[in-house]
Image (cartoon, rainbow, N blue to C red; front, side):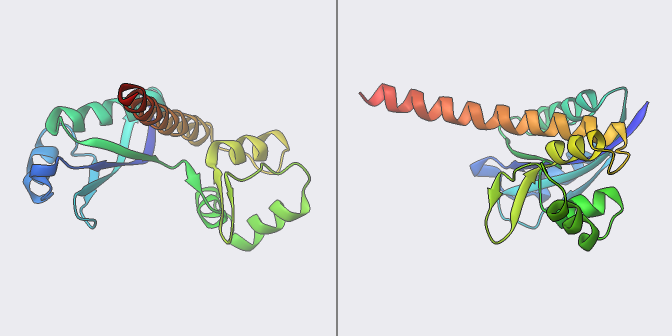
Amino acid sequence: MSEFSFTLIFILPQSQQDPALWLQALGENGCDDALIGVGVTGRIALNFIREAQTARQAVVSAIQDVKRIIPSAGLVEVAPDLVGLTDIAELMGFSRQYMRKVMVSRQCFPAPVHDGKTAIWHLESVLRWLRETGVSKVPLPLLELSAVTRQCNLQRELAALDSALQKQLGQL
């Protein structure tokens, strides 16, 4: 068994957006391994530390636990996935300065998903690169988790795009 640390962010049902309605139920029904955050109106974030055989089992079981308690909650994001240099450095135990030095001094550093004032990468891409180039030994559970969180977010995005396309086709 490995321990996986990840965050699930959900949008709450329109008629039940007060997160206080859900705190006790979540704690009593399978989410007692999560720290629950309620800072944004209509959203709830759960920072899990869950033991499981695989990262997929950890993340999927956590999503199922939340959806069982709040069936109409919508998954917004699974993290860590989209990260900046500071996030990567913290996860790897590096300084941000060292991570920036690695990024600018090495060829073939993964291309960011967004390259603006603050660049953003998929964590999985950077971790695989760090491992394959020998820059750092990446813990396998973290690499596995980053792949699962990326897949979850991509599936969610694809479902949203498909839904939007279906709406457009229905209007024709």
